[in-house]
Length: 90
Image 1 (cartoon, rainbow, N blue to C red):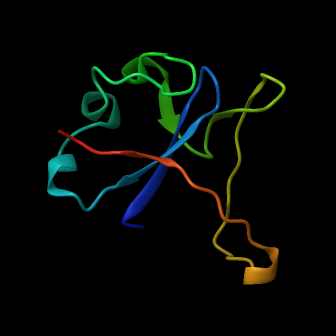
Image 2 (tube, rainbow, N blue to C red):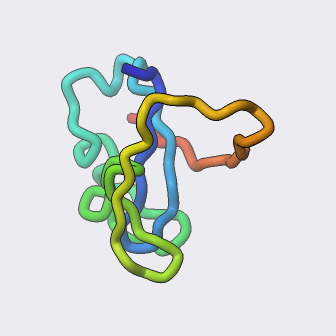
């Protein structure tokens, strides 16, 4: 398992990162961790709109999609760097 996991807002498609090794995540579902938080992009209640990414996501055209990323990591020259909002448990 990776120490970091990606999640998405199913209302707008914003992507978030979470450090699952943070002890505050221990034994908690993501919906519980984000309870009371709102998506910074669309203001949706994250406890109702969050999902694991890329297993389920909102595409730019508004459709719901899914993707199995597999296990092969592409070389650096084929990779993109993107910044995400971080989910920090309280």
